[in-house]
Length: 435
Image: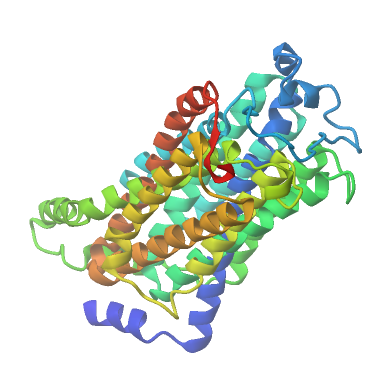
């Protein structure tokens, strides 16, 4: 049985292998697409709630709530001539991030211990139906708690879906990891453009409700891919991998010991992965909104446009690096060194919010692009390492315990970004590059 499993992994039929790689590319794309769209649409989601009227009249959310669904809705975003006085939003982007990620973490913690009881097809149907219901709730809700419930539901099933799909790669050739990673990377770029283009009054000009309802195509694409593109795993495949080395009378005990050993082996990488994602999202949702430049140092862009371009360039960095597994492999170096480089970038951006020494928006944008490169390379190399070094009968479990580490890092970043935003906004920036 072990030889058959290895043969299936090492020498799959060429046509079947490419079908599976493309299928996991689609799965990764769909998973990340909905996550990024919800972050992009977060202000619209909050603004159309009746409770948004209770916000202060000068806040961005309050201004949006007056005309949420208007076709030509838009916020003035002129470049700032003087940045000596800090321009802060009332709420940190970390608040939105927290609402969109914490339920996903809960799902990823629970899922590894119950995945073996659920057929992959049934699990995927549960995830896709949940995504559709969440999108409908968010698009049509007008009360704050209902909208947030929709966001939470979408986040929860998104976490289940990621854990389910990543665990399923254990049944396929290792190149499916590269397909998944590439799909998640491109989705970040496409989804941010998708929502912005649909709702921009100068382009298509749809209301947020219609734009969010357009995302219902995502769960449909997931289902079609699973049944018509993927070479689906059989119950025999799944059971054979789990039972490969646990056929003696003490098989269950052997499996438990094996899981503990696997966890201990991967613990240092789990910690590094958590650190990596904490640093990334603390910058993206905590510091970049405070990293703004005046007209002459920002190509004439306003603060909102600067923030959007930061996010786009970050997503491009992630996409390029996650798609580079076939060209460049850093192995263990990427997993142990790159998180600390990410921390160094975080310190630089943090210091820059108080003592502005990064001279131009273009330079800060390149640094954000590089941040995405670091994170993407570490991501794809980590899962490739787990796939290569873990025995096939423990691979599904190993991948499912590594996946929540990134989500935990994002949750910690969201909690840290909120007080950091409030504290930094009480200070006056010192623009050292003008001296």
